[in-house]
Image 1 (cartoon, rainbow, N blue to C red):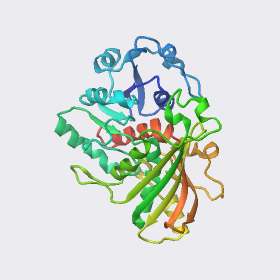
Image 2: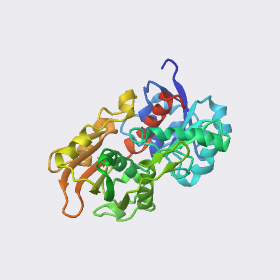
Image 3: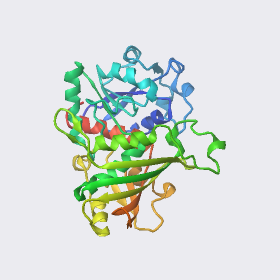
Amino acid sequence: MSVKRKVAILGATGAVGQRFIQLLQGHPWFEIEVLAASERSAGKKYKDACNWLMETELPKEIAEMPVANADVKSVEQVGDVDLVFSSLPGDLAGPVEAEFGALYPVFSKASAHRMDKDVPLLIPEINPEHAEMVKVQQKLRGWKGFITTDPNCSTIQLAISLKPLMQFGLKQIIVSTMQALSGAGYPGVASLDIIDNVVPFISGEEEKLEAEALKILGSFDGRMVKNADFQLSASCNRVHVKDGHLESVFIKLEQDPSIEEIEAAFANFKGEPQKLKLPSAPINPIVVRHEKNRPQPRFDRDAGCGMSVVVGRIRKDPIMTFKYMCLGHNTVRGAAGGGILSAELYVSKGLA
């Protein structure tokens, strides 16, 4: 790609916005043009508006950039942009993303539009054909741009692991999550609530996980998505881990494949991003670990530069067909990295 597309980041001072900035450094297709956030941050230099939380240094050129207010007029006054990444809080994202979506391609990490009937809920390896739904959206809404959304972080890794199992006939899934603190944003969970503790409740998380997976793994008929017909039950917990969601997954299948067949389905799985060799695509979307005590967040969350899902402890189950553990980096694959990969897919398809 000879000319880089210029991007705006909405919610740029937050934890996910910062991860977008980190991952976009040196990106071959995209260049940060505008950083936007709340009125509280607008008008300041980025270094003065944000508390930088990433392990890497704040890039000098980013530090000196001005922060715009997160509305179309303010963003357009700062620079010309080709597409928009949104990491706005869910309660603010709805109308703001719609304002931008009327004019620009918007790649949203927020929950506000995920279940809209004309909005894709996309994981590029899993349902790339759903990307075409933005044409329906543009026609219905009379928009020049569009909104496409990324799923909840816990949903992304689960759905990636479920896709290669669909060949065996998915019937029922039970999942219990152990979710990292960074999934709550910053400052997140109070220390006295989580030290020496597990919190067995994350507001709205179970409902998102149960609903989103059915849409993602459903079929697109050129007009709308018909949900997948398996059943899914989720229980979500917050644990004292910085990054990396770990999930315990129990599966009932129509068939009864061997453990070797299940492992092969995971290990051999590739999606459209791998075939297209998109810049952010991991070589292996799913990495299989054979050790009896893996995956673990500290050791496995950075697999595939944080873009791979790691599965292990694959074993038969006396009630369901089999069970396994599933790990994903919640702020890379589960947030900013997933959004960037979606944008790469749209660009490669000529949709953005």
